[in-house]
Length: 314
Ligand code: BDR
Ligand code: CA
Image (cartoon, rainbow, N blue to C red; front, side, top):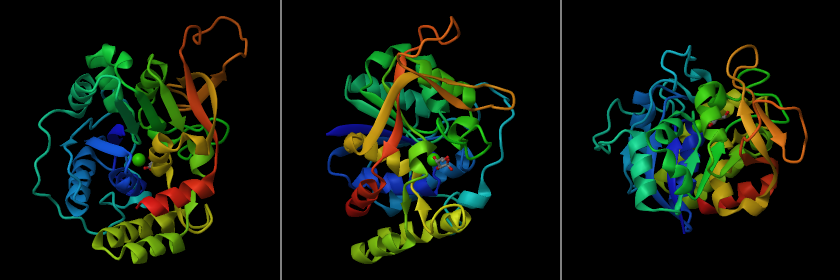
């Protein structure tokens, strides 16, 4: 059983990954922590509570960061063209959800949960890395207590999706991401290199809706339609399942090809938020890369098998 904390900014593809984590039999979802990104922190937290209620997910929701790790860093407007004004495809989520939040801030929830389950917790982070950076600052010893950190973010051997250099989750808080990638805990990064190949067709989504025949499956279908429209013309008709790829990695790492090496993030300038990996074994002169821990990035994916697993699970 994989004990998972899901750090997320729901977000349409975030919602699908949540449903996957909730339904997969080998996953024990210990909590949902929210972060700003696809919408404000108020909206992403409200959305997490909404999905928890609609999908009857029995785990705490802890509210996280509403701004970048370094306060007042110029940040970016939420991508309303992709996820809608309500963050869930403009389906009309109620203003407030009558469910309690966990009283702790997300980073405290992360630290407490890792300490209560030493060696067992996998962090699946699919938004800005801000909460994870705060958790590391609050309790640096968690690096030895966590099992694994699986991240959706970055673009290594391909362009970004916000700028030619940077992917959204990293671009939204580059300093936080650099802290998370260079910390001495085991990180696996599932970036655009593989997620852009992983597109669920609208027919497959409709199939899930019809096969499951429930209001839960209908909600997933409905909230995905706006996002699918945004991607039309950019990818084959359907939904790029970025965040679900990270969730799938937890239970089926054999569906991915990987490469090991230190990772750093460009902080500032024209390539703000770019992720770079120095493959293990490559020699360069002395630099800021010396002594940086080796992490894992995904370079290939069996997209068909990943999509089948998502389909069959949810
Ligand atoms: C990432 O950015 C967000 O829009 C998605 O939810 C995903 O986590 C993809 O770049
Ligand atoms: Ca996300």
